[in-house]
Length: 178
Image (tube, rainbow, N blue to C red; front, side):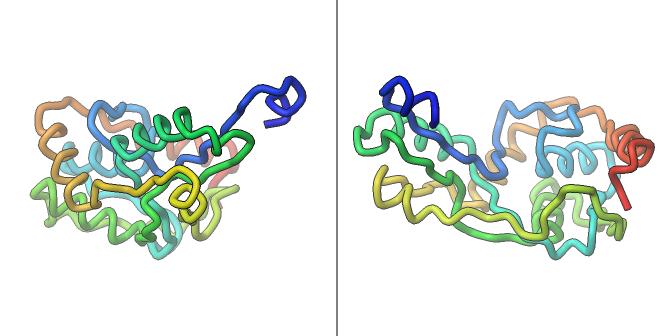
């Protein structure tokens, strides 16, 4: 935003919340919690959840993110502004793990609550999309249920390697979990 102002270039910043959807990298343990849960479930492992599972997050489908990007480029009034791009809905991480398990027909794999905290994580993180609605005309159109169903259909044809154990070891070695 500073460079845009300094050089008088129309600049827009978009803050993406937890983006999920088809073609998402599944074997990268840093790609996002839905992909991590899906990878665990597809390998018949329970989702691992930090803290108590009641932390809240906003999950937005990649199709809505793409639409928000297009609107930001095409809306002259967007210049110089920062917009949150999310669904505007808050879900607990436990709820998301259970929904993903149900969608993948793995509801027998109950989430495992670790009780550990990752250094730097915040308790709740969900989007206020009021400004994106008002200025861009952005409105999320893919519900969580629809998005998870489409995601699950795509996941059934994917190979997902579960690297969560090694990622957890790395976090522990670096002192990033307490």
